[in-house]
Length: 150
Image (cartoon, rainbow, N blue to C red; front, top):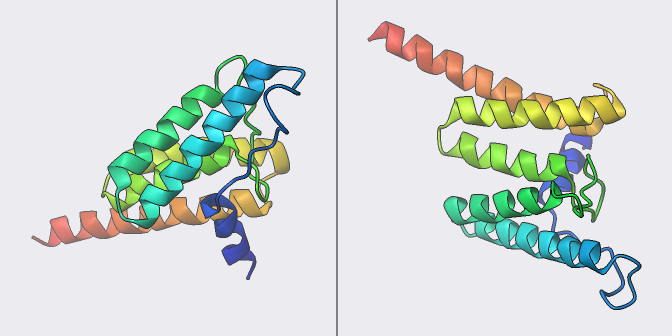
């Protein structure tokens, strides 16, 4: 389904886009790109083995590198490419699974703004992120209802 395709974009390992540091016209940017891809892929590995704190640490480090002047993060996800929205989506998912709904909502909202501004709100990346935001609102409302019933 299109939903599965959209979610797969956020959870797949990424490849290293430059051919090599020595042959690159901007070796520092290539080095940072390689480091970001490695950090992101390590984050994905830790997600898969259930080590969310370690995964979040790797995603945070990749995001920080990507936001440096030599960083070259794409704004949005594409197959096999690292992007701000993919990192944010993964960080949001970790916060959601940990029950930190407010933090997850903030992170997902940033990812949604990036995807919507780049492609429009009807794009697959925006839709997948809106779904996650909807799930958080569902759980938040349900938790508040349960508390009210006590």
